[in-house]
Image (cartoon, rainbow, N blue to C red; front, side, top):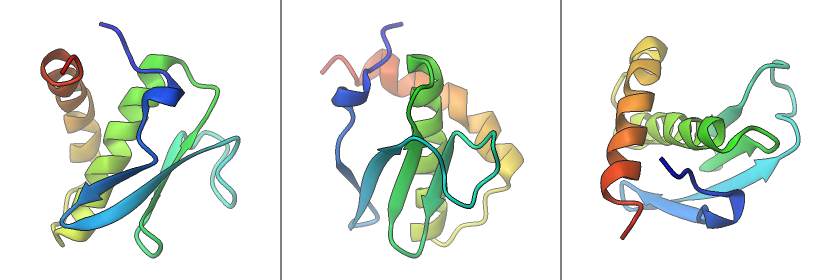
Length: 100
């Protein structure tokens, strides 16, 4: 599969009729060393650590979007379930929609 480059990602996305900013950063301030992304419910921002491979970046983007969906729709999704959904949803979107 062909994974998107950083420049291919949108600056913002709409989830639940709300706009979420998407930002690439060198490091998640206040986060653990191994964090690849972070979803801030307070300011509706998805942070993704740059410097990952394309596949990892894409899966991190999907992972953080799932957290944003969880926050906007007030549904409780365990972190284990988010990890389990990350790859199947990434493949679904990339395989069917990304080429549009």
